[in-house]
Amino acid sequence: MEDKRTEVSIFDKSNPLSVINSVSPQIAERLHQVPKAFLLYEEADFRYKYTVTQVDNALRVSFWREYYRRCASIERKSSEAKILSVDIFGGICNENYFYSRWLKIDWRVAWMVLPMPKYEDNLEYILGSSVERYKEIFAIPFYEEVENKRTGKINRRYNATNVRIFLAAHKQLEDRVKGSVIQRQDVRQLNVNKKAEDVSNELTLAQIEEKIRLLESEDGRGKGSSQRKADADSDMEDQDGIFDGEVVEDGEDTGGGECGGSEVSEDVSGEDSDDQLDSTDDEEDGDI
Image (tube, rainbow, N blue to C red; front, side):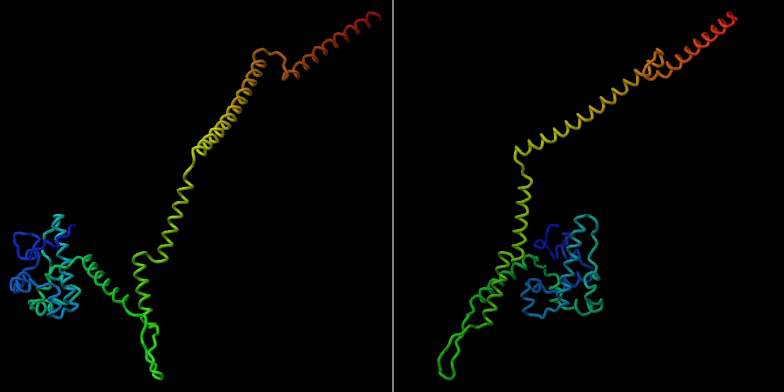
């Protein structure tokens, strides 16, 4: 959501995002009763003239959190409900204290509706102030003059406390600008790993062509062996077909029909032997 803190209006009733249109009737009535001079105060004025407590700070933060939440709801067209007072003081103080004591004080009501500065702006201010403090630290002397009570001579010696303060501030500032030692080592290691990875992933044209040639040769050997196996299977099928055709169709003796041929020859030889025996018997009968 766009930050509208510079566009906040308090009493503009025509603006649905104004403060007066966002709060409950009780708070709206108190806003009209607050002297206009309080509404012109800056945060430093409140802190200079009054004692701003933790409850005051918490109620102010809570109010603006709920205000920007309502602005977001209106922009999404999900709700235009006003801010509930319990959402402001809930978890900070009880209802009786909020209405009967806190809300009765004019400057506190004006304090609550004083727009909160941006978080980044606060940090920038703090950082700007810390730079001046760093300058003061770096300007402290390292030496101190000490009088020798016996001789009355002035001696110079290191102030160990000032040196430690300077070194600690210097280290913090160096880490803030250049990063800590561990952080620099991590970044350097990441850079080295990234460069090594890039080098390992980069192949020359000759290496790429060599890999392609190896892949093609492996693919060719695979296809050749498969083709030889297919040819061998085809030859076996052809031989089986030839063998089956000779036995079934022609009935000729082949290598597998040698046993059948021997049986026939045995039968024939057997018949011849019987005829020879019969003729011999006939001849013997004739002789007799």
